[in-house]
Amino acid sequence: MKTKWLISVQDGALDAVVSKLKQTGIQEVEILDSIGVILIVPGNHKIADIKKIDGVLSVEEERDISI
Amino acid sequence: MSKTLKKEEKVEYTGRYLVLLPEGSNTSDSINQINSISGLSLKSSLEFENEFFTDKDLAKTDGIVLDKLGIAIVNEKPKAENSISSFGDNEMIVEKERVVYAIGMLEESTQNYVEGYRDAVNQLTNALVGTETEDYQYQEQQSEVESVGATWGLKATNVVPTTFLRYNPYNGAGIKVAILDTGFDFSHPDFAGRPIVHQSFISGESTQDGHGHGTHCTGTACGPLSSPAASERYGIAYAASIYIGKVLSNGGSGGDGGILAGINWAIANRCDVVSMSLRGYVTGAGYSAVFETAAARALAQGTLIIAAAGNDSARPGVVKQVMHPANCPSIMAVGAVDVNMNVANFSNGGLYPTYGAVDIAAPGVNVYSSTKLPTKYASWNGTSMATPHVAGIAALWAQASGLRGINLWRKLTSTAKALPLPGRDVGAGLVQAPTKNRLIKFPIDKLPILVNPKFPIDPIGPIEKIIR
Image (cartoon, rainbow over all chains, first blue to last red; front, side, top):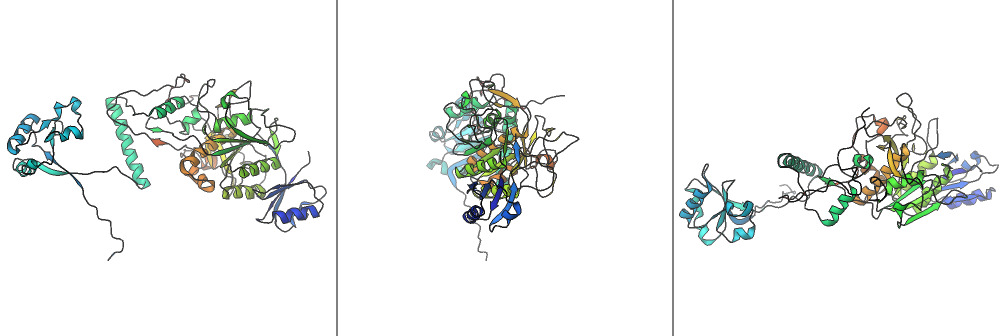
């Protein structure tokens, strides 16, 4: 299973951040609009690069969760 | 002059008179005396069966002498008005009867005081003259019968009060509760006919629970009022709308992305409460900024997220920190207690001063609930079991108070029962369901039903404690 990254974005910046992610070559993007979070499969990108995008609040690697 | 003049309190009178008879006089002599000096024709309360009379009975007479009190109630009639002054000349005290009203809107402290006074009087009455009964409405009586046999957790949290002086009229109707877990066993007979909205966030797996954990948690939060097969009631918000988000696989594991997708789905469906009996192991300091943002936005939209603190401790020696995502400040973290109100030995604690606190505690040891077939029912341990107790009770409070989001959070913590345990382990204390006081009417004419015929082995009573 590919590790995802979790990206929280500023209010109102969701579309702009998604657009920017796609411009940088990230195609697997899942938008969670009720909570303002984007899930991506990062490929060869670095977290630091994603954090530079305007409107991005924080970027984290997906953790394993269990009962 | 003050601009906030106090509203004038005007005393109203019924038109009748209360006459206090001379000390030591008997009723018969007093009646004869009053009748002779006033020309009235009073009756004794002894003339009525059990000395019970109504306003209509009183209206048919000039007045009635209350035998046990030595007081006469005298009607306002033309001939009485002329006679009242003569009572005072014969060592009798006369007052106009006042109009009295039931107490309406009270300050909370005053209401608590009055309710406490009433409860004390009722308990004292029970002790002196025996068990009392309520003037039940049929539907209410039926509800009571159905809810008598219940798990220790439901009793401890007042979902099923253990005193007849209180009852729980709330069932979660109109409240949407999302359980993000391993799914749900849709073939479980206790949920037959119950509409359930569901969505899987696990690739390649349907929402059907192949583990049993999700069915157990759903059972506690939203299980039925009664069941033909269960040994006791285990469900809290039995009329709530159930939303099942499968975010953990049949093996019991998943990832953050699925959890966030499940939260997003729950908010999009306008769920009021989200229950998450899951955790990601963390060792260092800090919490997820992404989950905190998501949870804060959920609260702002009226969705309260409740999550398990985690089962990584080995008390008394090892107390681990509250795990992810319950360690986020905007997610309500739930610790577990046992039937003796001790912290469960596995329950994690709040180790940091500014985040990662345990916010509230709930029953999490030997918790009986539904699970996947063919097992159908099981008693399990874990903060996973404590979390749906809080979620179900949150649904009851949401129904009872209309509160949502952060206000619902505050209601849960402000009404929790304080425990003599560190706040690090139990937060505000043991979660408590909303209840109401019964209106006890006298005279008492029938005995209450103490045992639910469907759960005869579990009569209502105090919570059993395990003696070790």
